[in-house]
Image (cartoon, rainbow, N blue to C red; front, side, top):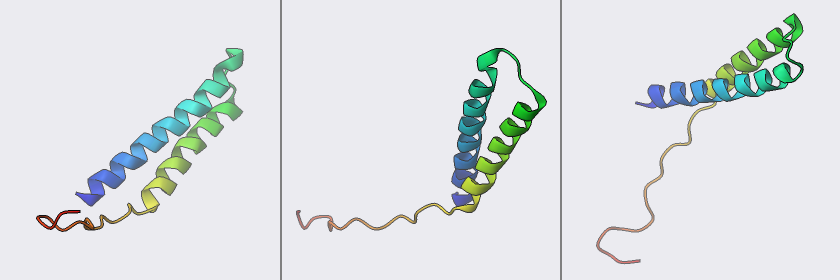
Length: 69
């Protein structure tokens, strides 16, 4: 289950980075080869970095059930 959530987290980060770079590149209605390289590198960088960073482990609740707060 952890691999699926790490992969999903990386996909969302890659899409967000790619969309941001693409919106910036399309401002002048022309996408140059340099802008294309920037979009690809943004997607790959976000995918790689986000997948490499582990998710925070879940910690047990501090409140014991049945004992009140």
